[in-house]
Structure formats: C-alpha cells, structure tokens
Amino acid sequence: MKPAAAVAAAWLALVLAGCHAVGPDYHLSPAPTPVAWHAEGPWRPGDPKDAIPKGEWWTVFRSAQLDGLEKQVVAANQDLVSAAARVQQARALASVAISNFYPQVGAAPSGQRFRLSGNRPSLGAPVLGPITENEWDLPFVLSYEPDLFGRTRRSVEAANTSYQAATADFENVKLVLTAETAADFFTLGEVDAEIAILDDSVASFEKALALIQNRHDGGVASGLDLAQEQSLLDATRTQATLERQLRASYEHALAVLCGAPAPDFRVAPASLQQYLPDIPVGVPSGVLERRPDIAREERLMASANAEIGVAKSAYYPSISLLATGGLEAAGIGNLLTLPSSLWAVGATIAQTVFSGGRVRAGVDFSKAGYQDAVAQYRQTALVAFQEVEDGLSGLQVYANAGKSQDTAVADSQRALNIAMDRYTGGLVTYLDVVTAQQSLLSNQRENAQIRGGQLVTSVMLVKALGGGWDASSLAAIRMTPDLKTAFRP
Image (cartoon, rainbow, N blue to C red; front, side):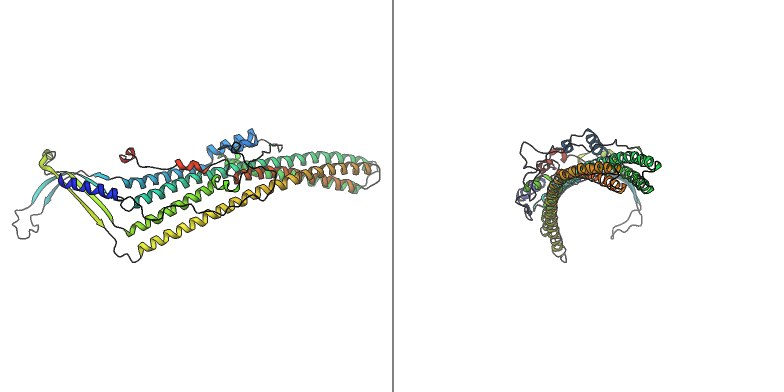
C-alpha cells in the first residue's frame, strides 16, 4: 500500500497547488450608455414599486383576447421549443465540463480461449508444440488529471456562462415572439377598424347613390353625378376586399406564432379601443440589466474571456495519475482468489515542447474571439438604446397626431354635411360632395392607423425595455460539482 499512499499524497499536493487558473479574470467591459432619454412624454420614470409585470408583460394592455393568444404562443410555439432545447444542450455541455473535476473509473471484463502456434518464434527457447489456454480478466482502471493550472476551471467557467447565455437567449426568443404576437394582434385590430369604416362607408355611399339615382330619374341630377358616386362606391368596395385579404394574412401569421395550422385558426374581430398603458421607462442604464439579448451577449463575452484561459493552459504541462487493478486467471474457478490479483499505479507528465506556433495561434484566436464578443455586446446595447428612443419618440408623435386627427375627422364630417346641404340646395355640383366623402373616408382610416400605431409602438417600447425581465435571474443558472454528480455514469 506504500506506493498507493505516495500517489495519493502527490495527488493531494497537486490539487492544493492548483489554486490559480491561468488566463485573465473576467471584468465587465463597459458599454456606451446615454445619460438620459432625449424624447419627452408621454412617459414617466419608473418607480421601484411600479414595474412592467415579469413574465406575462402583455397583461398591461388589459385584453383577455391577447392574453389567450400569448398563452398559446408560450405553450406551443416551435421556435420557443427549439430555444428551450438549446438551453438543455448548454446545460449538458456544462455537466460534461464539470466531469473533468472527477476521476474517471472504468472496467473491462473479458474472457477468451486461445491457441498458440506450434511454430511460434521462441527467441531460442524450445517450442513444445501448440498450446491452448483460457484467459479471464476483470480489470479496473482509475485515471485522474488534477487541475493544476486551471484548464478545467476555465472550461467550466466558459461552459456555465454559455449555459447562462443560452438561457438569456431563450428569454429573448420568448420576448420577441410574444411582442410580435401583440403587435400582430393590434395591427389586426387596426385592419378590423378600417374594414368597419369601409363597410360603413359602402353603406353610406349606397344610400347616396340611391338618392342620386332618384334625382337623376327625376331630371334633377346629371349622369355625371351618378357616375361619380358609383365610381366612389366601387372603389370603396375594392378597398374593403383588399383589407380583408390583409386581415387574413395577419391571422395566418398569428396561427404560426401560436403553433397552430393556419386553416384551422381563427381570431375574432378585435376592437381598436384597447387600453393604452402608462409604461414606466426608468433610466437608460437600467436597460442593460433588463434586456435578455444584452445579457446573452454579456455572458458570451464572459465565456470568450474564459476560453482565453483554456487556450493559455496549453502552455503548461498536464499531469495524469493512473491506477489499475483487477483479477487475472487462466481458469474462471480461481479468478476470485488473492493470487489472481494485480495492480499498478503511476503518473504521467506531458509537456508540449514545440508545436509550430499552434498553441500561440490558439491563444490569439481566443483573444480575437473575446474582442469580437465585446464588440457584439456594445453593438447590442447601442441598438437597445435606439429601440427605446424610437419607442419614446414614436409615442410622442402618435399622441400629438391622434389629437389633431380626431379634429380632422370631425372637420371632414362637418364639411360633408355642408357639401350635401349645398348640393341639395343647388348651390354646388356633386363633385364637392364626392370630394368631401373621400376626405372623410381617408381621415377616418388614417385615424384608425394612428390608434393602431400607438398600440404597436407601446408593444415595441415594452419589448425594448426587456418586458419586465431581469438579468439577475441568470445568477442561479449554473452547474456546480457535487457528490451526486460524481457517481453518475
């Protein structure tokens, strides 16, 4: 047992010596962050007690129909299922990296019956003819490579940060899909509002056409008046038909998002009179903590930093400890006896002396990968600030436009009433009435588009702010060594 004790003591000394991992320790690279948002209202700074709901952020819009669609997306969207599978892959890879902390134990039982040739070479010793024998082996092998220079620790660090990045990516995919669902839903509401406006206009134009037809039959109105109203009616019917096709396209897009076949999927007509939430924005630096895509890039940056240490560990020797033991006998009957036992212990030190620059190239590759990750992180942060600013300025523009467009619709309605009164009084031609009808229809449709744009922009702002997600949730996403894991196959 003395050799075994010596090896165990050497193993313990090597483990204790391996207290520092090679390569740079990770430090967060700063991203360019604005001091404040440039756009003004309608928004307010976020209060710590008043935040976007975590998880089901879409509930801020208070739409039961939207809530139902979002639940279908979370439950059945295939892109989200794929992202969840990638998280499980990253978790498994982290477990693979951790396995290098533990000794590897294997067994390879074998049994064979063999015959040696009677004409075998004997190096001068007499050969007594062919020999037939049995051989039974029950060997066990234990190998262990102590993490003297931190290669395993850096590998585990890289794998865990990749695992966290995959989790953040899952959250980002979920945020993108749910935001797209909400945007499509509100756009569908806008299209439904325009269809209703067009249908009402068709009904109104049909009544006007009947009036002109009666006046024409009575010799009061000209054929030109009749043709102008008929042309406007036909064009409006065409627009209504095209809007219904556009509605079908959005409905089919929602079907794909919800993981349902388009032919079997239906969305009831949605009202554009939705609740417009008051979104707490907060300070710009908070976006760095609330955006899952930024968190993903930051974790990939940490993983790339750890890979530098893995690459640098190739400069240092690797030490492997090996122990074998087992039983060997010519007959299975005496295999489990003490004279059949065998064992061996030893250690191997391997050091690359000359690699033609391969090790240095590997380190340079890892350093360049880290610089790439830093750039991707900063670029993602810049895009995030752009998206938030776009949302803020968009809401401001839509709020002002909505007020003026409400006035424009009222003015157009009043102009149409005046034009119709003046026409029936014989003061103007019917062209003035048709022009007023077209103006009212155009302003009504534009008003619906502004209302829909407000809701979609609100969705995009919530998405740009991270949908209530918080990067601190990633801290618990990691694999760590434990005894239970050590004894798994």
